[in-house]
Structures are given as C-alpha cells and as structure tokens.
Image 1 (cartoon, helix red, strand yellow):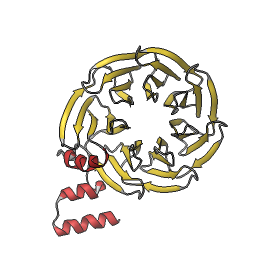
Image 2 (cartoon, helix red, strand yellow):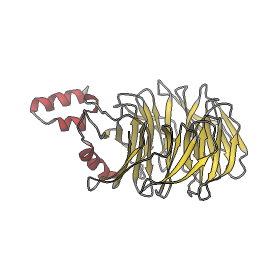
Image 3 (cartoon, one colour):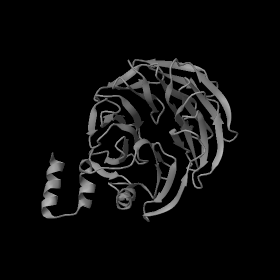
Image 4 (cartoon, helix red, strand yellow):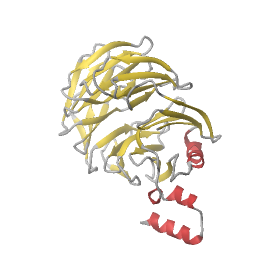
Length: 355
C-alpha cells in the first residue's frame, strides 16, 4: 500500500515512468518468459539466468552497460530445464528434456562435450566444489556422477522410487544430496555411490535441496509447502520451516551459513535464521510464483527469479527490494540502466538466457 501511495505521489509530481520502474515493480509488466534458474558464480561474481524455454545467451558487462557476447545454446533437441555454472566460471552445463546434459564454453557458447546416460529429462545439475565432477538428477529416478574432464560416468545413484528433482554436493565434495518425488532426500557417498542416510519427514515431493557451507546441515524444500533443516550426522530434523502457502521450489544458504532463503510458488521468498528457525523477512513483490533463489558471494544481497519474468534483488539485512531486473518491459528495454545500478553492488557481468 505504501508503494502504491508513493507511485501516486510521484505521478502527481510529474516524475517519469522510469522512477516507477525502480520503485513499483507491480505497476508494470515484464515481457520476459518465466525465470527457471539463477546462479551466482562466486569466483567471477557473475549471474547466470535461464528462462523457460531458453537457448539464447547474452553476456553483459554491467559496469560498462554494454553487450559483450551473445550466442545460442542449440546443441539440444528439447528445451533446457536445468543448468549449472562451473566454480571457475569457464563452463556451463545444461540439462534438457531430451535426456542429455551438454557442456558449453561460457565465453564462446560452443559445445565442448555431452553427458549421455539418463533415460528421462535432466531435471537438476550440480558441480562439485573443485569442478572435477558433476551430478545430474533425472526423471528416470536416478542421479549420475560424471568425470568432467573425461566426460565419463563415475557412479549411478539408484535408490529413489520417483523422479530426482534436485541435487547438491557437500562443501568437501565427499557426499551428494538428492531430493525426489518419492518424498525423501538421500545422502550418498560420492566416491562409492553408496546411500548413507535417507531423510524422511516431508509429506510430498522434495523438489529443492542445499548443503550448509560447513556441511553439517542440509536443507530440503517440498511440495508440502515447508522446508526442513536436517542434521547430516544423525539425519534428524532440526527445524521445520512453516511460512509458505505453496510449494517450496528453491532453497539456499548464505555464504556464512547463518541465514536460509526459501522461494515458493506462493509468490514469496523468506529469509530465516538458520540457528533458531525464526522467520526474519518475507520478500513479497513478485506477481507470480518464485522458481529460483540465490545469495550474492558476500551474502548481503539475494536474487529471486519468478514465473513473472522478473529477477528481483533484495537487501538481506532489511528485507527491502533493491532493484527489479527485466530486459523487456512492454516492448521497451530498461535492462541497461537497471542492471547498471544493480551490478555496481555485485560485479561486472550478467549472463542472461532468453528465448
């Protein structure tokens, strides 16, 4: 209500619509397709964004407000549904409905390899911390661990009775976490492929998972509208986070592990205290469900990506909206001025996947 009042006062004062763009995201429309994934590369401070569907890639230098590269990821025969950015920022892997995972050079956009082995859509991808292996989850009910350099299969993780919707590596790379439609998450030994522990407590599909930076806890988000924080050693739930009214599509830890971020189809994201499970801030400016969330490398800013086509940047301390990001607004482009303002805070480049 306060934002609507502010916009009204600005219009009365005769200020421009560009101010409305910055301060009132709900009063304008973004014509981008739905945001599927947002990844923040810590090494290069780059943001990787993928839309549904999305094969066109743009590399923006936010400080100079100029386009560095654009190319099309056309090596797969069906829409891209998942992706991951290598820790060193040199490679991107995309997972597709055509059952493939394809490796791309992040600068040239050229295919540098394929990972073939799944018999269903590749729903999720995660790099190990050292970038030497990658995990892919699939609708075929398995996850596969791959050697990145040789592009060969290391282990097949079989143990779920439903689609594997999310995968994550532990900070030391020794274990892998998978979340499934069978309502469970499983911790696996990355070297042997042996299941170590099954996390049971959700009443619907587990669709998002994350490791804490210290590797002692993991977080799962589910279609039962809650997120659960688990003790890795015991497999016991530490906190059940109630606050969303729809499925929890994405979960993340802050770099220091003190704050949790959950994004939901209920159009909100919530910041939580990881130690106490207390709700800190509810982020409410999207016009459609949230699909993806991410923390900045310094933990001071979070990104939320939504089916409304927007990426929103938020201040972690206050929970306030900093800037919305959208490259196409009612047929006109406001991306450069908005990106320039935002990326002064976080880095110099933005990778933007668009249809």
